[in-house]
Image 1 (spheres, rainbow, N blue to C red):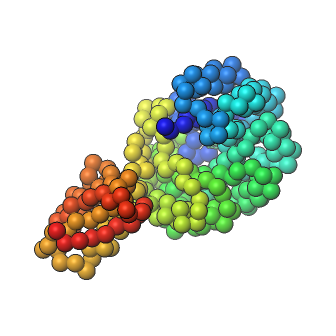
Image 2: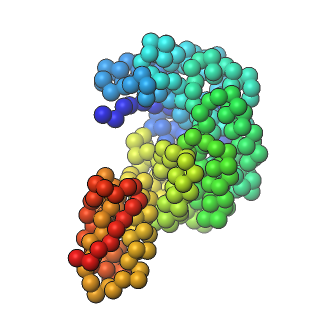
Length: 333
Ligand code: SF4
């Protein structure tokens, strides 16, 4: 059974300005200020569902910049969450914040309220890209905050975006490399999507910004995924969540409800084409992949089967329970 976390959105609070792509109320699907009672209610609902685990489930505060919100308010939310940690219902509290809103005092405070994981919105490690997107912090802020978070014994999570205004594939790959060097436990990758009522929306309309297509973003994110996985970093999110009101505020860019499936599909397509490249296209082949990865290998809506056919290969893709993730074998049929 998959255990559930309690995800709570602290909508666009704590930020003194707005990043070029940000419309937090659209992403979280709510503009209501979160209260301690909301935290308790969400925990109770999750516990009643019978799908929480004291060793796996977390209470997570996302959105906004958690450590930049009014301290009294922040403590009221943390206190409500801690009640449920003390009762042994959840493993710990996870928060997300900006790299320039971390210091030793804040970390001590978070530690005293059972926060165990901190995610930083790094978004890019290129100072030019950060500045163009009005992030208000530098790559060095990300490095300093990451070191401090790890030094204080928290699990470090980092978030990056691809296709930001002023960025390109090379800069995004550089960002991934720089993030890996900071040794995070987890990473989230978000391709930039243009939402209504943002600076990017204005740039899009003025013809100053061209977002990535879904296919371009999936190809790039597939590369990033491999880089992180090979470095032992868990990728816990690829693409925006399909919940909330993203579809309502969506203007342009690589938003797809099954974006991570597209990325995994890209990885398998690349591997399959590599394995077929010296083979006779007039023959039929059986490609075997790890049984639990079969749908990823076939691709979303079987797009990889179609792509192989379009490249002139006649293949059947099958699962094999003796193969590992990403392992494939090719045999003549
Ligand atoms: S730091 Fe996050 S919440 Fe704040 S403006 Fe930027 S993207 Fe929005």
